[in-house]
Every structure is written in C-alpha cells, then in structure tokens.
Length: 161
Image (cartoon, rainbow, N blue to C red):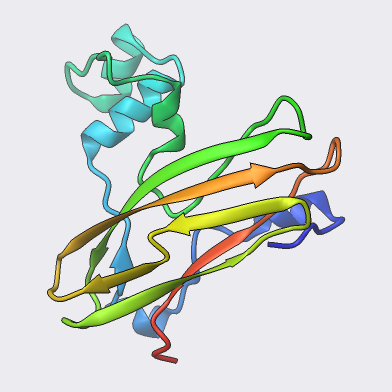
C-alpha cells in the first residue's frame, strides 16, 4: 500500500490480479453466496420490496444484517470509511477456499502506507486438501493525513512464481 498522490489511481486496481492463462487454475477463492449479498444489502439499508426485487425472492433482513456485515462481505477487497483520520480502526473477517495444491502454504504480504499498521491473523494459511477453508482477520490501526485517500495491499503468496 502506498499513499499515492493521485486519488483516482486507488480506484483503478480492481479486486485482484487477472492472469487469463492461469484463470482455469485458481489458488485461493473468496466464496460468496446469495445470502451473503442479502446481508450486505440489508446493512446498506435495503429492505422490503426493493430487497425482494434485487434478490428475486422473498429475502428479508434479519438481526444478523447490520453495519458490521458491510465490512465482512467475503470479498477480496476492503474498504473503510473513517470519521477521524487520527483514529483509524478497522477489522475485517474473511474466509478463503483452497483450489491450489493439496498441500500448500500461503504467507500474508502486506504493504501499508505510512501511519497505518495492518496485521493479518493468522499470517500463514496452510492447507492439506482441496476445497479446505481457512479464515483470517485483517486489523487496520493508526492514522492518516486529513482528507487523504490511501491504499494498501494484501497478497497471499505461496512462493510458486
């Protein structure tokens, strides 16, 4: 993660590296299903007929649907809106599924801008089978300059390339 002076550059990256020749052979996958999206939409204020229209079923918001759910959509990107740039504090829960090698180990490689401490727990994910799931938590703490948008990166590296 680097604090780039071009604010628009942060929004040009997407959610992951795309290599078409390797697409048929994914390694770690962030799985989502319909209920995950419903929880996310509920956390954003969708409900009633509008939610049913988007979900195309009789989905409704439950007590699990809260603002915390928005941060924990099992997606390979993270976004944190803060009120006071002097007190940045975010916690993100994610789960990945192994579609790589049977026995594989991935280490978290984080690049963070000045002022932020980003930790991943656990920082190493070891798999012993295909479709095995492992969860991790990303914790962001620190401060940033006022009115500045910053970017960071987390890469799960298996040292294969």
